[in-house]
Image (tube, rainbow, N blue to C red; front, side, top):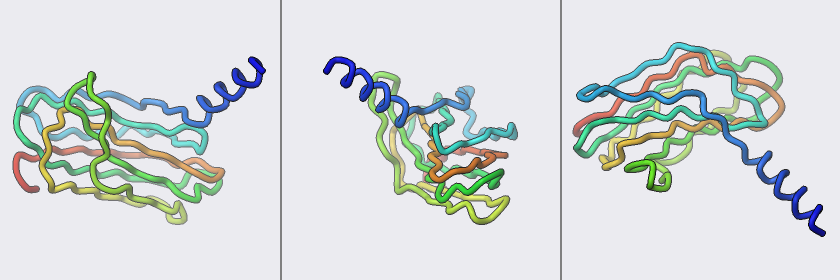
Amino acid sequence: MKKLVLILAVLFAFVYAEAQMLTTNLKPGYTFVQVTTDYTLTNTTASYWQVNTQLDSQLAQAWVVNLDSASGDHTNVALQLYGRVCSLDAWATIGSAINWVGTTSDTTISYINDTENEYRQFRLNYVGTGTGTTTISEQAFKVYKGTP
């Protein structure tokens, strides 16, 4: 019985694995960051980019990403924005997920949240399903003081 519980725990951890692509710390006063490094998203591991800000006001957010179906068939890539006040806080969902079906190549997706919030850390999450890989070729993140 103990072995069964251990096997189930390991399987659960594998299925819900996430890998952090990178962390970006915006310098005080900065509101925009762009990353042109290519990252590969698979169907086995969700990936995310964490952006930490130093701003002390309510913020709206914009996130732009370029996705390209690299190989196989990702039946869906879900993009979701999360926020939290600090590392002691739990991640909260911001807005609704955007789903890309992976049938087109070189697709640019823009996500704008014009509802201001008081989060200082943001997590841009990518989850692929199906049997393929997707290239995340460019990402940009902007916070706004006021409506974008």
